[in-house]
Length: 118
Image 1 (tube, helix red, strand yellow):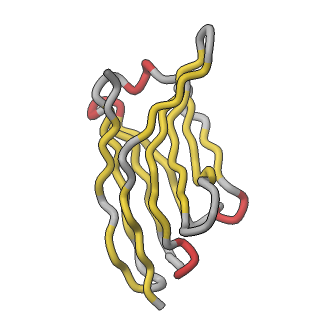
Image 2 (cartoon, helix red, strand yellow; image 1 turned 180 degrees about the horizontal axis):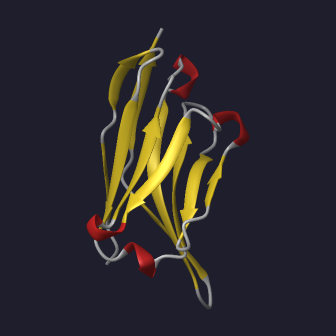
Image 3 (tube, helix red, strand yellow; image 1 turned 45 degrees about the vertical axis):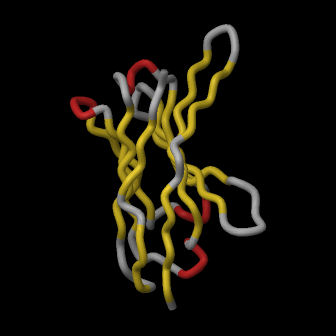
C-alpha cells in the first residue's frame, strides 16, 4: 500500500516562502515520477511541478522561477520550495506519484492547505 504524507502547508503573507514535504512509504525510485498538484476552490486540480526518476524536472509555466521541486532519495521525500508567494497561490497542494507499467497508476496524498494572505 503506497502512502504519501504531505506536510509544511500553512498561512503565509504575500512575498513569503513555504516548503512542502511529501514522504513516500517506500523508495521513490519505485515511481516513474513524483510531483505536486494544486487545487483552488472552484478550479480543477493542476500540475505545479514534477520530477522523474532520472531527476528531470518540469514546472507549470506560470510558476517557473518561484517554485522549485527537489528530492532526498535517502529520505524517500520530495519537496516543493515556494518563494515569493502570491494570494493566487492559495490552494490545497497534493503530492502525486505515478507508476507506468501495463497501466498508469496514480497515487495521491491527502493534501495540505496553503493560504497566502495579501
